[in-house]
Image (cartoon, rainbow, N blue to C red; front, side):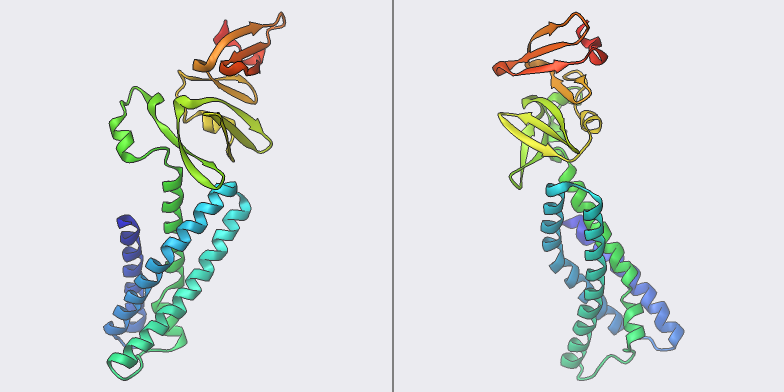
Length: 257
């Protein structure tokens, strides 16, 4: 979580800087107030991060970055920024009352809004969501990427969703991928994994030497092909391990000539 804390501290530092400039323009400066607002903001985002991570991961597993999910995340971001404002001001007033027996000397609604910049908090939320999305789309851990030979990408693994959980699947286990409505179905190890992504973009992350497009709706792992049965018109059938039969199109038959 080190990078998340770094992002939060960076955004809060910007907010405190803008808040200080606003206080200077009003002729009232209180570095203690700004410090407590920064501490309150840090506590707020650290508390929110894990629920945010769970919520974002569930959305991604369910339907990816669809329009409705983007709108939902945007709404949550605005709500989180507003809650952050109230949380920080409550934290500020409570801390001043307990420690100093007074209220903040520069507190009013306008000062509270600008010293705890809502745009900055929204930016912090967007940054955290971006990190969560990146982590969930990473096909394998850094350690695995470092130990794999750069010339042998077939040993990599990718994360796929299965029954609302993420499962690490070796690329070698994938027998074929098929288009299904607005998603693709990935067949590996006797299981089906649904992913809301185009077939072309998913094939782009797979090794070219192993996966070939055999139909406009099908990509196959050539290591699973046991027999190729061509038709006179150029189309044909592929027999895979286990007796599974797939069609291949003459538009994609250059590999089999």
